[in-house]
Length: 323
Length: 294
Image (cartoon, rainbow over all chains, first blue to last red; front, side, top):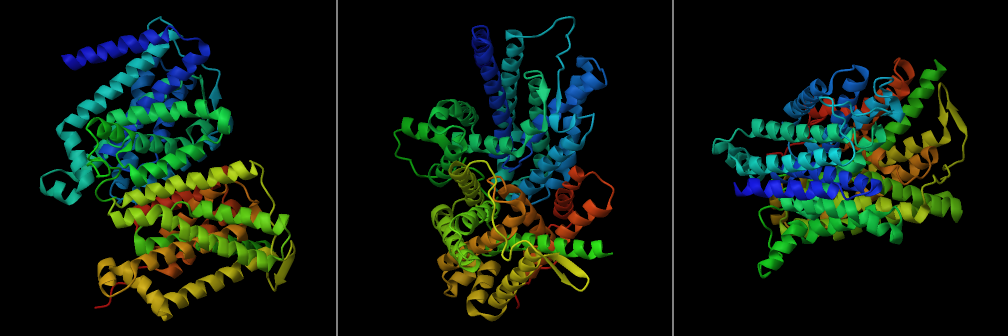
């Protein structure tokens, strides 16, 4: 009950903000919310389930492209296009996950990296279906039950999406499934001995988080009203990884902190170093892995606790256990 | 038919580049288990080194290439020292150094992008741009130069691992780290050397490929993926697997572009599909690793 109240307050406050912003700020606010949404689900995949996958942003792209193609080219009503898109994401995720989760450690990263690159190749070569290198543009969100969602109202949709993702990963994390994921991450043999089906746990974690990314992509598609291969490149999958590691891997608050920080930083840094903010991200990432594996959120918690525990490696270090 | 033989030469040359990159991965991953994606970025650093020394300062080619190799040896050694050793010795999870190296990759790329800007920079070929015909086989000077250098590097690597005591100590660390340490092998030295050698080999690949593609700050990731694909095809267990994997990849790539009726854009997907297929069907690669002899 208390948490429901919390979500409700957050929804009201975050939605209220949407009505105070101008066009430019609205755009930034919406994308910030979407990055947080993605970071939350990626944190579950990477931080909690321990899978280094570079395909998260690809599923964001699959969701965006699928819904746009279904709505504008096949002329399906939105209420039908949305569940079909989710289904497409789930099927794509299963196709990747069932063979790929057999791969040990870093090989999963490579398979998903190749998958991500392949997606871009297919988008570029998709002809009229995907619009090739230019992507698809000049479409609009169709009216839902006679209502045209736009402006702050659409921002509210994004707020709800973000909070729903938070609630989803939060509940999953606290459930049997979340504990099974952590166990499979830290010590697969021991987890299997305790009766956890490691393989299906991994497949399920990958599929659920990828579908969440697909849903976020679906919402994103009508933020800019344009989708193109450049948007869904590998760069952003790396950025997600950096957000999680810098913020604090395996912790929801860390994911949110990392996403906000890395999204906002380029705006603050651009007067100083122009477009080279990735240099700062890279340095932060190296420093975080070397000296603060629990990320900024771990730093903050240590500081609150009186900091005698600094330097010890908490249980949520990135990729704890076998890689 | 002439066209066919020319294709063989150019595919062999690209295969050699991929093979060198795969060897670079292999040198690091055998003794340490670490996959260092910055291999592509190392190639890029060397390409820019080539631009600075050969195009800008106009040093003679051989001296320039030597200097770049020494520089890359230093980069590899420093990388191990700064980003890897601490983590390995602290007993950090095996993924930690890989992630730290991913961060390093971005740092390398952005440093180059800050210093040289986004425009591609020319790097000269070893013997200028000319055409050599050996009977039916014909290709650019640079293609033949790449093949010769690669063969020398692989012969050197083979000799090192098979015939020298230091090479055997690498192999021992690869097979059983603890046992090797107990036998008095200096793990630190093996790790530092493996990264330094990997830096040199990746640097060679970068400076050799640069005349064809120009030095550019985004050239690293494709090199990293191609080299990795070659490694997966050949298998991480054997040095010759790296070269074999590189050649298979390059031939698959170039023959698809030339003879299969697919758009060139889709042909870019060939290495990716190969990578996925090999990962799924044969993750140990084509060549079986050597087992410890009992």
